[in-house]
Image (cartoon, rainbow, N blue to C red; front, side, top):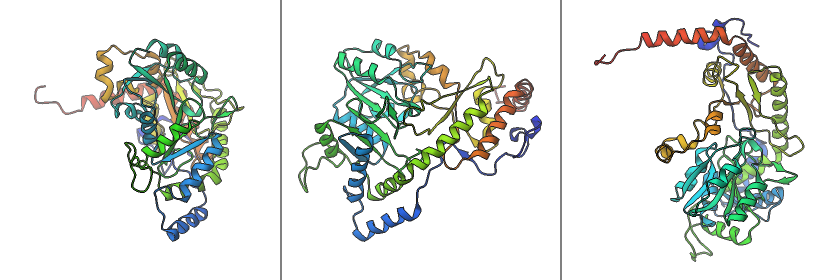
Length: 415
């Protein structure tokens, strides 16, 4: 372990990086190569590569059973899963969603000319605030898009009650919440539909992939038609559709990952518990906790940097960690409502989401997963404790460095 004893030991000030290779928030987990290659060879022998092959069918049956839902419809990625659910539910006009989410959640609506109406969050849960949500409902509102963030369920009962009372469709973005439960019930069976992502950076991946879980038979049928150009037979097109199919090699990867999923979760849990222990006496950091009575994938290690007790900001800490090859991430900065496609509309309509904006400036997500173990976590936490324990000295050094850069920056011709 490369101990940092002086400010000059930090890589951002010329020291040697703590890690030779970069550590990421979501480096892909890999299951049994032998099991995967066996499936690939069988697929090649059968010469059935896509178009609802046997692996896709098995994958869908397995996930429907795992999530305790009537139907699971596998598709090519999580964004398409959202788009198909939105289209199949005939959403239009306006749909309310949290701004504190990955941009794909908003894009899936706007791509279909549906206006995303951004709602603030409850700072204690990081999830959409039901009271704020209800105040945003208008005559143009047709649905609610909740997000299960960090693998923790958003306020399911409150959103369900609001949607029933106002006659709205209810969809959930469950990209973070595969294999997680809420009050003993698996996430996947809530609302009209729930969309999942199996991107390579997720703890469970199919290389690239996603799917929709639902208990609605008619909705599942529409989704299956839509993902395959609207085909209801060999040459019979009965509805509008697109190409959203999952291929066989992705399904083969998914089936292989399922065999190791409990090992991935156990590793994530050990990492989570170690981070908790390392940070328990550090006042400038609060770490998001999980309800250990529920099933959880422990996919994200989420901390908030308290800018009132630390002279080093979240962004400065992230830069210092990056120099040490610890690629910590700020999620979901600055909030969807302030990202380029939506910023002008938000400003023009006077949208202010103070809790979202506050959290977006505080949150930092740290590396975990099977590529990170106890030694790496000890080193990461040592660096963070070192930085926050010398924040006065660091503040002075950072300010000096900033002034030096500014005084030596080239002047424009007008200056």
